[in-house]
Length: 410
Image (cartoon, rainbow, N blue to C red):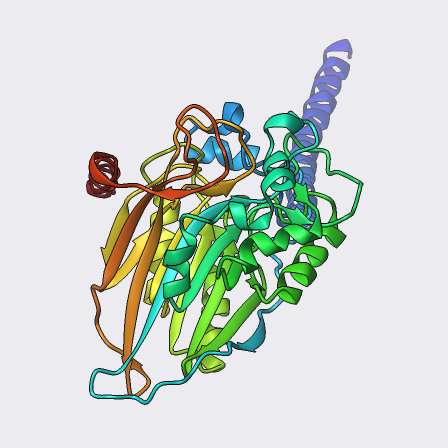
């Protein structure tokens, strides 16, 4: 009898094991399916990350940026900007008519000569030595001192453009950054009194004393008849009957994400009737003499979309010049009237001048380019903030330097 009982118990245990295995085979796959389902659902329902906001880096953060590759510099440039970035407002076209005589369109057409210059920082940083600052020269010499040697050149052209790197304001709240520049509003006469008609403000020092310092700079420059443009503000200037479009793009924080703004700003100028379009870029690596791939890609895009001239600044040194699809790209014009440094190591700069000819309102092919080598100071051992054209061997040295850098453009 005990043998029968043992057999029955054995069969019962065997049956229970089979039932347990069957249960496991059902429950485990079901559990895994549920886990997979809810995992995928949570991923799909997770909100997208917001695009990074544009940030500003000091124009002279040389220790951090000068010798870093573009990708590392990109991170450095995303720290403390007040200007809006990727989600930039749509371009606003502002129109201006300069009071110059409109010539008749002859067989030779109408010629427009445009001079472009690099970084003009009027004023100083409050932490700089007052005795050696640009302000000391202003107090001693007045507004006419600074452009005295280049003024005759600018008075002969039709339109002179600078990159205005700083603010004209009475605001006192300085941004928390390494360098912040401001000047008294009356310093606008440094430009207006020297036949400078336009200034790009799309750079990393246009908000150094807050948003109001930016709008103050616009107000004070334009009240002194210096047209301003940059970011979403594009300018259509009518000059000698020709409509010239100006736009400024701040690249340092967003890099190739600025492509859309390049397209939109140029498109807006075209729709407004621009016959000649000039794009200013604030871009590149400080103290690098060769443009990086981002600069090159954005420059080519601008010309592909309709720009007739591309001008660059921010590296604080000269970079090369490229001709692309019969249009010129001056990748960096260096510093010009620069209150941001009392003794820059590299004082070479230039005026990039080009004469455009339009016949019956259409731009003709032209290679009428004039490179005017300059030093940002009349003194070699310090900055006296008075740019001067170079002559003789020094002129040729800078021309050779520009040619060398141009040949290095990849």
